[in-house]
Image 1 (tube, rainbow, N blue to C red):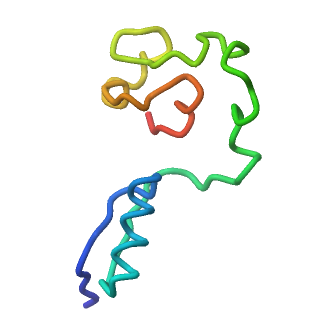
Image 2 (image 1 turned 180 degrees about the vertical axis):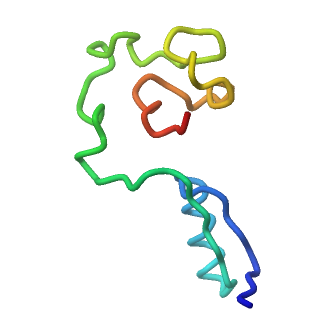
Length: 90
């Protein structure tokens, strides 16, 4: 059976960095990711779009606001915005 010193849940910017740091320090690290594979440039659909071209002007989406109806947990974070909601799982 394989054993790990650390398990990182999610490979977002924080999880990816945590896994990198733990691995560089010599810890046997397992990363678990549920999200889809992201292809650079192709999947960054809002990458070069100015906020004024987005329907909600890249507003922060919180619980009960337009655009956050299917994301009751994700909408509780300060990082959940119109420009990046396609990276969050429903």
